[in-house]
Image 1 (cartoon, rainbow over the protein chains, first blue to last red):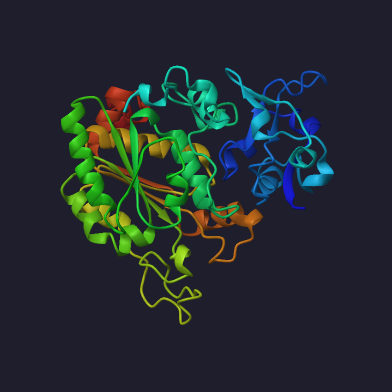
Image 2 (image 1 turned 90 degrees about the vertical axis):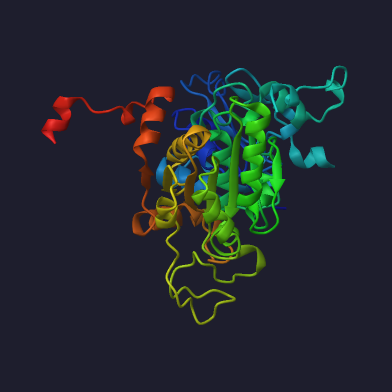
Length: 109
Length: 296
């Protein structure tokens, strides 16, 4: 198994910083859903990771911890996360993107 | 070379891969996008084989977002790490033989101007420090002296990262590398000085730990190259393999290097200032009112 970035929606949706989306070296990997926090009563949306593109460099973790100081991103084993976004489940809207969450490990099998 | 080349052939759309469909339907073509919107649209850069956490990848990604008209842009590159990512984008990529990139771009720019006349077609050269300052040095400088109108971007990782860590002209003095065990004996080349001497209209240094600044610098450089003359950007894009930087510390290193020896600098000619302020509304380059000049 291998490590990928996992963003805590509750912490992320409480802010509108979006720094991790700008600092990820991989394109189309950390995406942003404007409506992610609405169900839980948060003001902002949240970033999420398309785990099949994440190379596990943890640059977003450093940016979130040290520049944004939100500590919302952790590196976790792919089989420990549960349901996550995959590129094939991502939909781009007019000003947002969203994903139907799926279990990447089960999906591969 | 227009918006047509990113459309489906009628009837074939449903057979295309998801990435392609996303690019056509939600890509940046024909729209104005900015770095603050990334994550909400499909970027033109695709998956590529560059190392995890590479700062060069981040810079290339930001540069691709910053292109003012991606549908009218052609990138030119050469051997080196950068081309592994630059070639994986939804803009045409021309591969010059090692060191030939600025020569190839010169011909390409002239050809595009003959073919398309006034409609701007941007040519952007992105190559490493070895391809530009060592092996392609003559062609790079000659293209500047000839005032060829295209943008040259140096991805300066200060080492030959692709071939095991040899010193390049842009490596710092006394730097010890795997293939330079005694340390480099000469100073880092002053490419910025040479760019100014040879007549570049816009010259800037940038580090990718400030995405908005990268965006602004690339936009200006590409716009200046349309009408005024050559533009040159030198970007510090560390090699985390050869310089042994842990991937999660790459931005920390970028920050340290930026404050230490790679400060943001910008050189712009008066002609380019006037052009940017008149045509593209860059207010910072508008001539200062007489009262403000007197106060200084």
